[in-house]
Length: 143
Length: 136
Image (cartoon, rainbow over all chains, first blue to last red; front, side):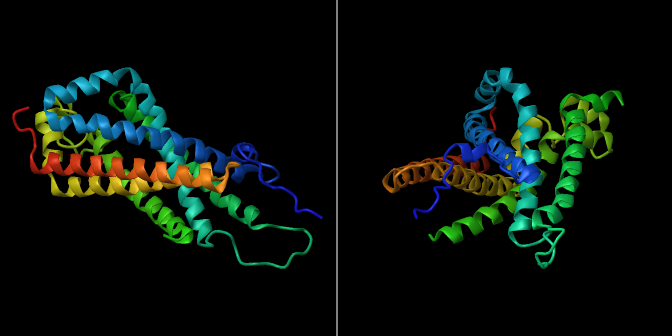
């Protein structure tokens, strides 16, 4: 019997299957990652203009000014990617998954045991998002 | 380099980026928070004459370019950021249904982009540090 073809192709980027929350976090990790690497390449070019002097740098900054709100979404993407990435690295090293247990009913997987870590990360993302939003929109001045 | 070793460095660079981007973000973008906490004098923040956060070219951008510690942060950010990002991008593309030959071509293209961007980024940071545009 031929082996089942489990290669989902591009569907594999977004399909969570039965893995639920953490799998959607993994999808979000990839979407935010794509945005960040695109920004990094643009950012390299724009910030390089300061070597040509203040006028050249100011011109480059003015050119990207219409995209300024994009920096806010970039900030959100970075904190999501960083916090969730931290959880993924920890899981990769076997931390936050609990000790191996016997496979008896009621069944529990390491995903279940890691979920509390996932909720903690969500809380950290929320706090950082509030602080960053306050700073980005200068809300701190009126506090 | 072996794939497992590349993956290991992907993890290590990710952890390093959390630290480096944390420094970069707090210093250069959380200036109003730092002012609120008292780390930056209110008057300096209003005039843009403080070293952290401000986009004032003469008083903030140039001193940051000349700072050895900020130059080190920028260099590590360029190298780790490009490696982490482009290796991640390559991993995503490799999940698609391509032939081995096509994947090899994609790998070479991404490696070329990475090397070119790294050379450009490192040159930019070092040139800005060693030969800053003092005349503005």
